[in-house]
Length: 226
Image 1 (cartoon, rainbow, N blue to C red):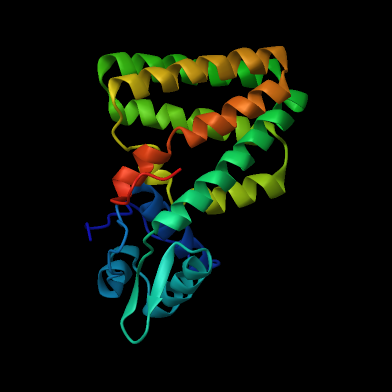
Image 2 (cartoon, rainbow, N blue to C red):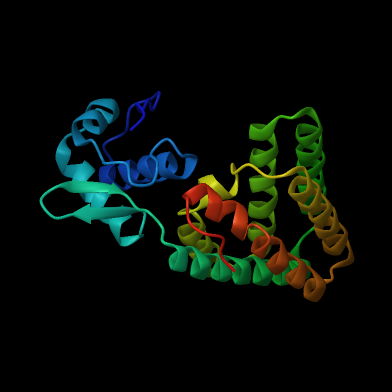
């Protein structure tokens, strides 16, 4: 597992929750990779904590499916099977479709403007070959639409589920055709948000996510799904 550098210490209030937040982000960013063993000694040293809050955090992340508990052997970052990936992608596609439909009812022009700014930055990153920038803005766009849905329950389910494949979804390599298709679909998303066409945006969001299946599956080393 890569070395973890948090940069700052962790406060003592709700310590295990804060530790869980830090570990959750490390998993989602890819610093803690699928199947990597959790090194408790390294984490306690880096976070400046004892093993008790760390182990409580590990239990939290295990209930979320981000970690797997190993009998008498600690824990590791969860892996994903072909079947699990197929099922997760379908649910995420449904959640994003619902978010798009709801967002068209509630989103403000200012929010659409912000999403378009991110889109333009994403396209610029794509044209310059800046993959990290491209995926960062891509993620912001999807999260912006989810936030505009104004549905906390939907957002919480989405965050919990998508976190397991977030790194692969927003960093997996794509072919030139896949890149071009994704950019084109994002352009249509903005147009449909402007038109407040929730039904059409829901269809587009679902197909957009389904189109990522083969890319994400390849990143996890499983056969193409779907």
